[in-house]
Length: 371
Image 1 (cartoon, rainbow, N blue to C red):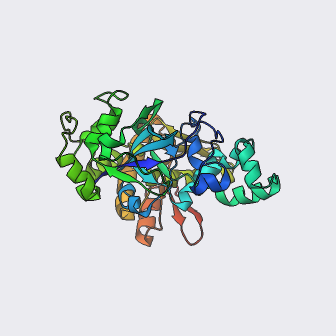
Image 2: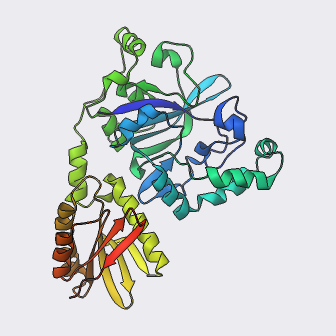
Image 3: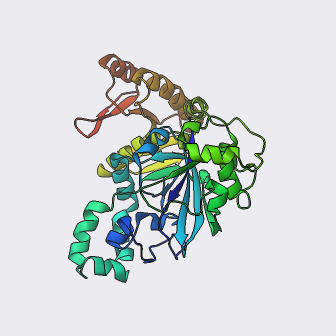
């Protein structure tokens, strides 16, 4: 089941590319002088096919984001008015491990230089840069959300919202810790002049399976007494089962965030060994040199699937890549968890190598196969 929400963020006068120093009366921005959402429109905030963005994270949203069934319309308030800033659908939450990988790859720590330019930040930290850096060292690994790049849209100009039209009230909640579930028709009404009917975001909003229980009784009652915007034709798109098909059969990595995480960890492993590599070229997840030998590696996360099924899928893909791209390439399966001894023996008997991430050792174990 899906949910679409309005989520307050702080106001920014630099188009959400860098922090702008707008004062805030409450919450994290008030306490520290900036907000992590102030980079939401920064083009560098992308990671392995995903757009990264931030809001505060109420616990009630995690159920939907676990399977990408969350949509977020960010909104900010300025001079007593409310504005829609962006919309994202098919949104996933970044857990601490993933945030650490993201921040290391994108070198998010260096953003402190942009923050420290703000006079109100300096005041919050008594103009003591060392004090601020001690804080930032513990706080920089915090980018809450990701969604496929094509499913995030930052509006060219903030869209003025009508609280009366949305909820029948004169104001919307502006507390950063809150959110307001809305009907998909309301989200469509907000974006209809900025996002075309055939856009994937609109299709996501038009597709079924929204959880009506998230909507407050007051909003349901308001909707019943007020004619809502006419919905365009509903479409069937991207159920969880269909997205798994896209990943397993068609090789679309965007629909499987666990794949991005495991590949990021494996790339860090290769970098530590100083192995030259290329990612996502000719549909091959990773190509790298181990000595003088070219290796084709297929990445297979195993959190939601048995290792034996991941191995079966990887074997077919790797043999096809070898046949089509380079018949001399060595083949390697990379798993997200420890396989059985029988599975290890099976893979090695084919002349393929096998690597798997060991949670206890916090690194990969590599078992070399021979041709």
